[in-house]
Length: 70
Image (cartoon, rainbow, N blue to C red; front, top):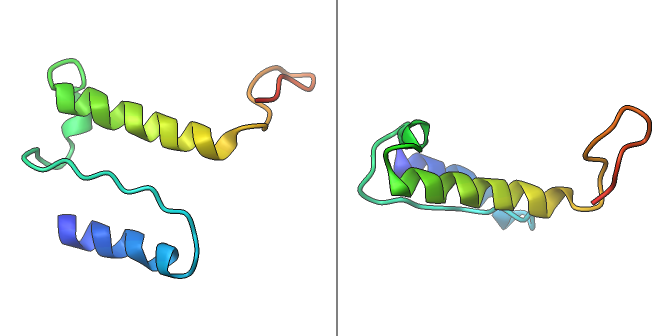
């Protein structure tokens, strides 16, 4: 599964897209669900949140009437 995921991430990168990739050797599929038990899960989720936030900067993030940007 790891090899397939890395190959999947490589395709948009080869076309010039920005693709974050994070590899966690030694853990099992679905490990982020155990964030309260595994430090690796906490790191993985934090990294995913950072990757999402970096792509969404400057966009609406709250409120019904215009909200806040950034």
